Length: 90
Image 1 (tube, one colour):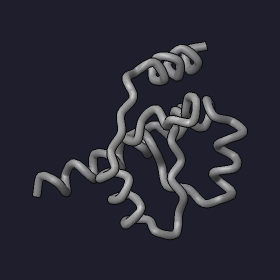
Image 2 (image 1 turned 180 degrees about the horizontal axis):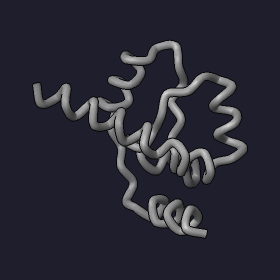
Image 3 (image 1 turned 180 degrees about the vertical axis):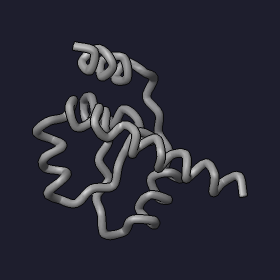
């Protein structure tokens, strides 16, 4: 139940878009797909900052288990974001 509440709260955050961050992740992991942990609504991704690079197979698994995958991989997404911020601050 706590996971469901956290997932709902995260999905209710304002939409955040960042072409620069998306491009940075793509350049850092060119062989991987980008999975948005919070998914989308009406075709618009909810948060470009909460994503993880994944293989095609992992992406398929994530799409079938969205909430569980998001909660279990939130720390990876945040670590990736922190790495990006650290590189910007150099």
